[in-house]
Length: 448
Image 1: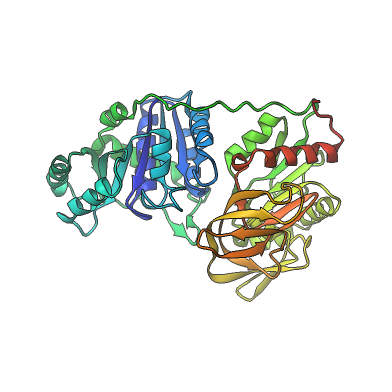
Image 2: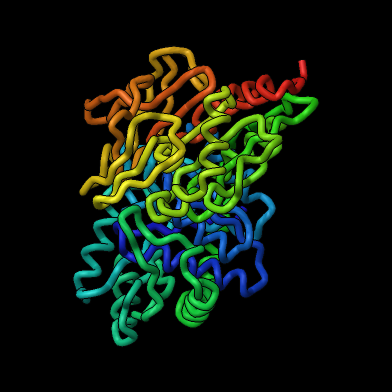
């Protein structure tokens, strides 16, 4: 099974640009490409999807155990010509050995191409590369792609690789095809009107400057052993799960959705921005994260939708509301002196802060039984937001790897609502409990 990880020396080194360029070039060869993102990020996979035309998936060794990571890579990549995996932050960056591109490469025995940003360097490139090659050994780094490298320095780059015993896989010259950023990372792919043209340009650069055939040669390795995960359909009559999906609510893990479908749920997408109500046949509701603050005025004006959500949630429909979805359930959103009315499920309000709040990986410990959790359950999760609430909830305890802890989330027999994002494959019973609750709410039968 062909697979490659495109990792980097750090955030901002050009991983996403190079990954998109390489995938676009492979697709131009009419290859079937599957794509993945190491870590919990939602935005980079959206760019991948614009290129390959199908879902991109996350591989996260903090969320999931080693067998699950291998299963998800194999399950989502087995029918492709090559799986391209984008790294996260710097190659070795993670938490206690988990969550990094390095850990994913070790678990899946995947060769790694390191992207090095060359701006402002010449011979010092050798020191950077040597450091990554020798910091932890063994590692799966098989070569380098030099980003923003002037053509005149290509001979030097090749010489450095030769001296350090690694492969030169090409370079990307400086160009004006940039992808804008905002406080949560890159802007989303749907916000870039000329995204197709930009990807085409990057693909042409890759075809000219990156050694694609050599990458294909190094990407071929036997797949490591793993235990297949058999998921049985639980229902004779599928419960319908309504999932928010539009510009305001677009952060969800594709494997969460596919797991619900494998269990036997039927997914119906809807837009809190533009639809009048939640689908009438909904037996469950997922309000995803995203950027509701960018569309606060439109959300506040869509009164019929907010009333629909409030009525259903107050009526006991099983609901998962993460981060942006959690924000939407508040009475109002306060931003820069302006106040926007939200759905009003909670009497509390959310407000913008000047820095990241409770950023990074956490473990959630349940204080009581609820929709997704049994008392004492511990589930790995992730937070990344600049917003806060006057009442974040006290149903769960968030445990940070550095020893800090805090109360969070509003949980009940029919609700999980809070800033933390969760991955269903971290504990498959989460998805099963949610699906069963949806079936019971909708009066659907499940397989005995």
